[in-house]
Structure formats: structure tokens, C-alpha cells
Image 1: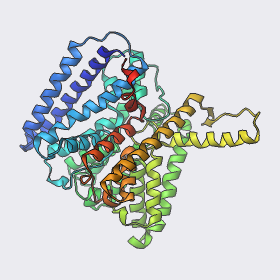
Image 2: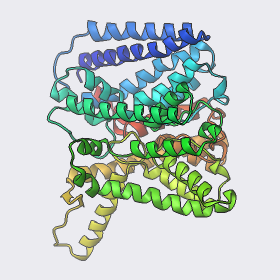
Image 3: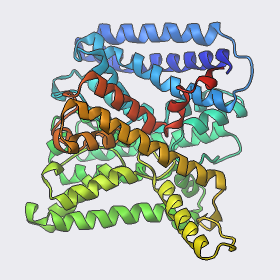
Image 4: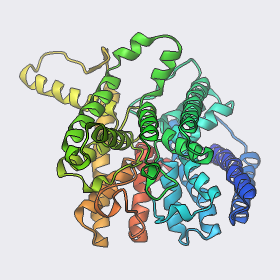
Amino acid sequence: MNYRNVLSILGTVLLAEGILLSVPLLISLFSRDDCIPAFGFSALITIIIGLILSLAIKKTSDLTAKDGFIICGLSWIVLSLFGALPFFISGHINSYVDAVFETVSGLTTTGSSVISDVESLPKSLLFWRSFTHWIGGMGVLVFILAVLPLSQSRTMHLMKAEVPGPKVGKLVSKLRFTAQILYAIYIVLTIIEVLLLLIGGMPLFDSVVNSFATAGTGGFAIKNASIAAYNSPYFDGVITVFMVLFGINFNLYYLILLGDIKSVLKNRELHVYLGILILATAIIAVDIYSLYGSVFESIRYSSFQVASIMTTTGFATSDFNQWSNLSKTILVTLMFIGSCAGSTGGGIKVSRIMILIRNSAREIKRMIMPRAVMSVKIDGKPVENDTIAGAHSYLCVYLLIFFASVIILSVDQFDLTTNFTSVAACINNIGPGLSAVGPTGNFSAFSDVSKIVLIFDMLAGRLEIFPILMLFNISAWK
């Protein structure tokens, strides 16, 4: 492994985070809250260490694939450790483990929280919580790739390690331009949502931070009752639409810009994604009709919760912990399915599930016709065997981590529903679970050991597992 390359890029990542920390610092100065020293010191120490690493350590050669995975895993850990400083130094979170949990939850766009009363936080910390969603939504390294002139080989390995989905593709010939296009689309969609919320009468600060959380499909709210606090069908509708939009593969938006609407309309992953959303919304709306007494209200609450869970955003307008077992079962199922590859959402991903199902169907056919030559196709194109093998490997490791985490959490003596959905919520980057960690609960009651396990799950889920596991492979450090 090329240690100079790794440390140099880690320095660049820290430098970027230090600059980003200056934004909530300005808000703290403007609002004159008690977080000015916390953000000032955090930004300063992060920038200094970043400059030392990025300038003092010279890069030597292009990155290998192994370097890309190591850099990706380490970058997210380092970002979380330094990003937690404002919470801890300000004293609003007394435990550093809790502060790291909150920061990891933000950066990985999970939205699980250890804070019981978010409305007691100053605006600067509320902004930083939601801003971490927006930073982590498209990917920190994708942002670095968009602004730094790295070589094609260095860019490719970093992009592969961070971008969610079974396979990374290029929109244009150079991956740096691809990253710039993705971020441009990301920024434009975020601005549009802010404007629509403002038109509906939501305050500017609320519009910005809620749009950050929606864009990153994160779900950190600035109200204890989440989006339900606004009690507005208009806000529910706008946020529902944008949660769905941010759960779609961003490559499709680029095709729309090119005028290739036909390819977008033929995209099978999009069909399945929207089909599941509509079907789940319809079933739950019928199931909860007796609770709300009108078709409109049933669809309003059903569509919001379904979109929030499937896109792994985690906002809530209703305590679905009180819904029937059928509705809760559907929501838990959606936690695992997740959104589209190449989106800001989490979960296993619709495309990966499509590949696994179609490959299973192919294997059944092979048992009947062993000599037949068959391929797995998505959108009429054969899926490479490496991609299929990668999907199976991902699912296998995913399940091992999932059940190992549930077993460790069981030591805290919570009920099975709490433990199971806590892990599901964290590894799929969703936020709320059921029972003690439902929409009205939080993760503060877990022990530090359990929180560290859930921190690992959040990072593994956001980075598609392997970049984090690579850090535990001794041979990778040679």
C-alpha cells in the first residue's frame, strides 16, 4: 500500500472538512450562541492537520484499487472523528462516543440519533447535523473528485469505493466531469426544494436544513416531532416528492438533460422502484384508513412514510410504531430493499435485488436445462458475471454482519424488535426503527459497545461494506 498517497488524500479530506466547518461557525457567530469556541477550535485543528498531511507528504504514484478502498474507509472514519468535535466540545453531547454516533449517523445519511430534545440545540449545531447529511449524501470523495484535478486512475478507484450500487459507471469520458455533473444535479434539486418549501411558508432556516436532510436522504429533523411538527399537507407533499426523486439513480437525470427520455422511461430499475413505492403506499393506505377516517389522510401519511423508509430518509409525520403489524412489516421490508443504485439512498438497492432474483431464476432454469446458455439481463443488456458474483458476496457478508450485530445488541436486554430494527435502521442508513427506537424514540439508551457496533453498521451500510472490511485485512496494509 502507498502510505504517502493515502495520508496525502486523507489530509485533503480533512482540509475540506475544516473549511466546511466554517459554515456553521459563521451561523454561530451570527446567532451569538454558545458554540463559537467549539466550531472555531474544531475548524482550526482540522484545517491544520489537513494542511500538514496534504502538503508535507508528497504523493508518489497513481492509486491502486486497494489504496482506493483503504482511503475511502479511513476518510469516513476520520471525517466522523473530527466532525464530532463540535458536539462534544460544546457540551451539548457529553459522551464522545455519542458525539461520534451522531456525526456518523449524519454523514452516512442514517438519521438515527442519541439526542432526546433536538429543539434545545442551538441553530449552528442543528445546521451542522443536517449539513453532514448533505455532505455525505452524494459522497465526500465524490466532492473531492469534482474539485481536484486527480488523474483518471486515481479517480476511478476512489469512485468505485464510494459510489453505492453494484457497479460504477461514467456519464462522460472523464470521471472528474462525471462527479461535477452529479454534484450540479444534486445542488439544483436541493435549491428547488428549498424554494418550494419557502413558497409554502416554511422559514428559511427550516427550509434549508430540511432540504439538506431530504437531499442526503438522511432524516435529521430540527423538531422533536420531525416533519409532523409542521402539520402541513403541502410540506408533506413536497418532501415526499423530493425523497422519491433523490432515491432515483442520478444517471437518469443526466439522460433527461441530454433529452434521452426514451432510455429513462425504459429503465427497469426505475419501474421496479416506483412500482414498489406505489404498491406499498396503496396497501398501507387501505390498512390505516380506520385510523385517519379519510382517503386523503390515509394516502398522505402512507405515501410519506413509505417514501421516507424506502429511500432511507427517516423523516416521520406519524408514529408508525402504532400502526398494524401488516403496515409495520411492509415498512421493515422496505428498509432492506432501499432505493436505486447511484442515488443518495441506502439499503441493499433495487438493482442488486433485481440481479439476485434474476440470477436465482436462471439457476432454477439451469437445473431443468443444464446445457442451455442463459444470461442475466437488465434493461436488455447482459449483466457481467463479476457483477453477479459481487451481488452475492455483498448479500452474504451483509447477512453475517447483520445477525452478528443483533446478537451483540441483545446483551443490552432490549426486546428483539428493538434490536432487530435498530440494526436494520443503521446498516440500511434509515434512522428510526420500531419499539424503543421508533419515530418517537432514539438510540441513547444503548451501551457504548452497542453504539460502536451500530456506528460500524452505519459506515458499512453507507460504503457498501467492503471498504470498511478492507481496513481489517492485514494484507491490505502491506
